[in-house]
Length: 266
Image (tube, rainbow, N blue to C red):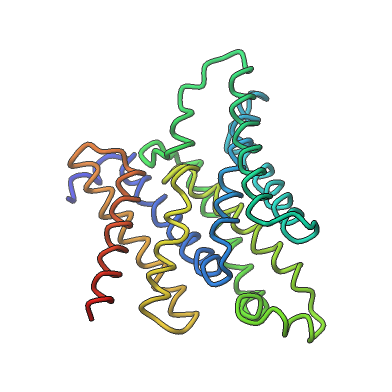
């Protein structure tokens, strides 16, 4: 196993997996507790429009992904909080709209998009040093926001009515949470891709919820799980020559199913 670290792309892949696990492990816990998994999935899929925008403007698609993801989060927030539309209907429409915008922009761009599939399904082996710098900065931003607004986000997940009674605007922190989901999309795009990233965002958090009770323990255990999954699946995909993103997802799904079966037996 040690031999695989002689390659720079494998060292970058492991570093990217750790950074993605930190962001997703933290944000995923709040997504699961707040029960906005489908909403988060809508944000991540709609953000594909940013990839298409990047190709169309001839810039790095990841650079265009961040503002488009934030815009997707704002659109989802508006559709679910400030309108009378049914939440699942609004999310489905916006999800399809974002994906369609991305595909149309890629199609009308007068050049070939050779690595488009890596944004859809991930290719952690293509992570560059510049990607790691950006991922580190976004990780630090997420950790700082969680530390600053820890109690507010805790109240948002467990007692939103109390927040309103105490004079704090829960909608502000709800939108902040959606924006952090959008930011985590940028971190995950090279690891599992836009299509599969909801798995890394939610499965470690769901397993943590079933095995530990306190919020801080859930946060820590979710991050540790993500790191273990990514590291072991990277090694497995390298040995078996399998796509890394899909391997990570399948291993996590298998582990989750095993835990469910064992808990039901016990």
